[in-house]
Image 1 (cartoon, rainbow, N blue to C red):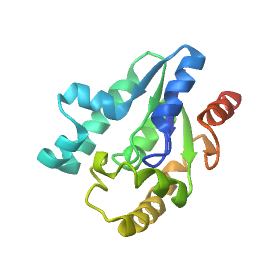
Image 2 (cartoon, helix red, strand yellow):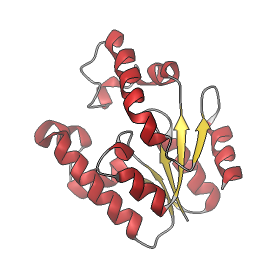
Image 3 (cartoon, rainbow, N blue to C red):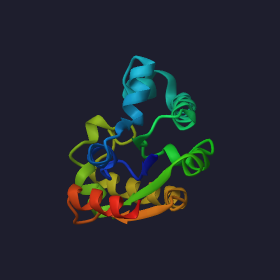
Image 4 (cartoon, rainbow, N blue to C red):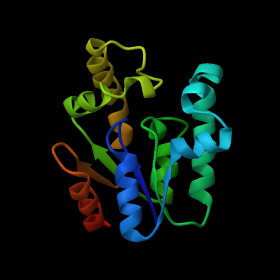
Length: 169
């Protein structure tokens, strides 16, 4: 079984992937970490030195590699992963996909604290951040909503979210 978590940055994909993997005795893989390990540098460095297009191409290659192998795992995708190079089709054809849906306010509250660690938003003022999130969600939601399942995460603990997913699968 492959479970692939989708959602905007800071929706809790990595944390939930770890909880689910532990509950199911599966490996937890964070796609961004997998890319960093294989590329030998951070996502931030890849964006800075080689650009987003290079990153998205690598992201697609590594997603294909993971999707096509015979291992079972829980994968935390990147926030933009489903939106590029037909990745959403690769995801939905090769695993149980779950969209962790969060409100703009929830995402803002989380991201305002982690801006420096996120290449796409590190240079934004707090005022521009909420607008950026809203615009991105508008663009990305049609991809996220192609997931097999959707879990609204607002106001829920990671334990509650993981249990909801376990009940669905």
